[in-house]
Image 1 (cartoon, helix red, strand yellow):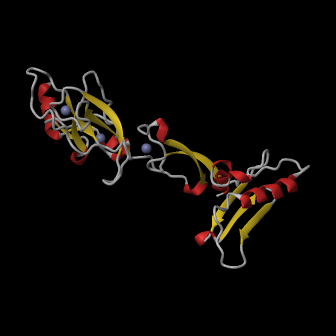
Image 2: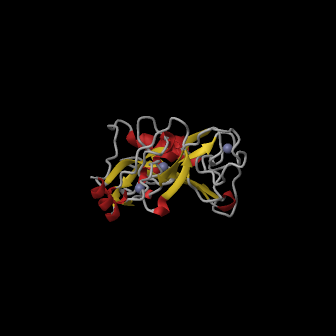
Image 3: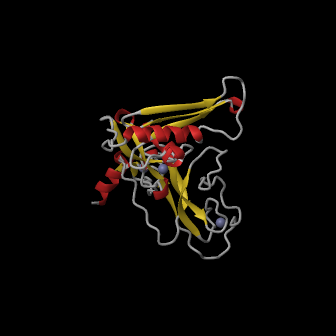
Length: 260
Ligand SMILES: [Zn+2]
Ligand SMILES: [Zn+2]
Ligand SMILES: [Zn+2]
């Protein structure tokens, strides 16, 4: 709260109350029809509030809390601090500064872009314990900008934000599959499609899925499997989740024994 109120004075509607060398916080206020306006300001040592208005129900034109009230609060606080050591605020012990993803409000995952990671204050017990799952890596068609289909000649791996349908986020995850390249057009061109594991614990990062062969069981659960087109030269790590690993089934063991 203190930090928010300091922002009002450092770069918000209350910059008129800024006192050089003294940390100051504050908030402006204006009532209906501009009948009252006020500013409440505070430093680590003092607080001050100035209200401006008429006793009768008159309104004031072009007056607002960040104007004269903020200026007056500044002069009073400045006077009060004269010849005093510059004070500082102490931060409560259970408040910490953490990095979070601004899109999800959760801890940054490896898929969150640099620009989406912000520093915030948090009460220790409210530090998010989950990682962002809103940034997702997908393969898109370079030409249509939509999700790549298996005939798209040029694709690109990109990170998007999953949002609700109404969001206008420019990095919103595409929902449609490319409608330009719907047919196989270049004969003989090898298409590199792979299955990836979409387990939420991967936080949107692409992992090649463990798909059981005829003599195996286990592997990544079918509900997390997704077939994607991989750009040439792109390699993916294999899903490392312990319970997604492949096991040899009994028939496999027998075949194995016969082989020996
Ligand atoms: Zn994120
Ligand atoms: Zn395409
Ligand atoms: Zn998996």
